[in-house]
Image (cartoon, rainbow, N blue to C red):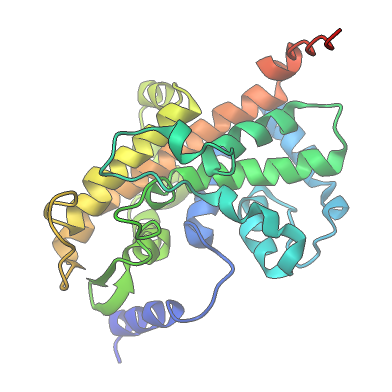
Length: 302
């Protein structure tokens, strides 16, 4: 078996082995976090490192957070710890239907979705009055959830397919997988490794002026952006007419389509890292608006 076919075989094998990871697998999350760490202000970097040095307070020795890369996958790792962190399951995604008008209030009415948890955990990281354990846990969640938001299939779904988990297709030489697994790992690993590889390579393709533009907007704006990418690039590449035609039985991503999607996925990683850096700087420079100027408590009824 030659090296290419061996790699394909191993990738296919991974699809049937249970894994605690559920988004971007490790490589995508770690790369997003590394991009952010390269862009944050020096004081922010020092604050992150100071929090990470307190990792023992989390009491999750099998899921360490000694580095920002480890922190980026901690929220997936803790899924192996059973009921202890089961409350966080729905925080990793939001099922926004690509064939309906974008409405985050409808899709996240109870706050238990990735975009609302990004906002909540950023506030917690910024709040110096909280215990270190709470702030460190919030930091790990924040880093991870920004990565999740920029995996388009954690921001959207089609016909209740659970973010592409139910959409079966052929990927290159792999005869049977699903669209979510492709974007989580198979395509993500391929794209991040493509020249120029890794966080430095991805950043080298984004000019400083474009980085500043990508960092702008709100979390809702970024949610809408990922939802649109899911509609046009993710589903639109696999399905000829996602909202008006049934899913074909022979859906596939051939090499031509894979090559077209690599820059799309690399840009998603760049967006995630750039926007995460902004949120971390806001939280750790002491100027987060909701912490520096907290809302006044409501007056008690007389």
